[in-house]
Length: 90
Image 1 (spheres, rainbow, N blue to C red):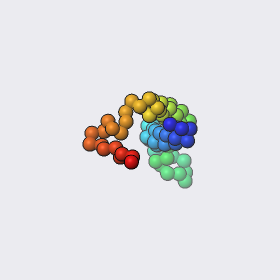
Image 2: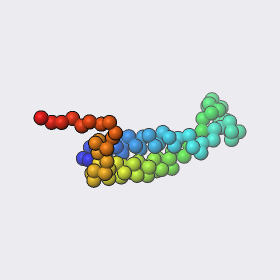
Image 3: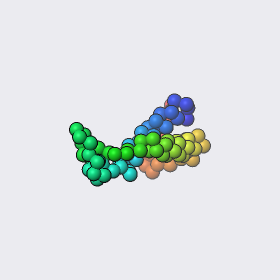
Image 4: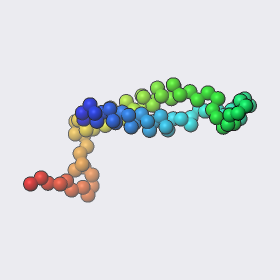
């Protein structure tokens, strides 16, 4: 896996992990009884984006490490997929 491929895997894994972590641990203004005038009652009081970004980074690095190991060391190949017929070059 090259540098560009590694960066793309990291970016995609980070974004998916970050989006998945967004709803965890969030309390709305309505739940905290602290609705600011002119804001939506469902808006979060303390979203904790920095902490979620850190956890998303750790998850993305773990996903990248597993994929790097699988690709670089040939643990799994396309021939391991049942029913897969690899194209033959002439």
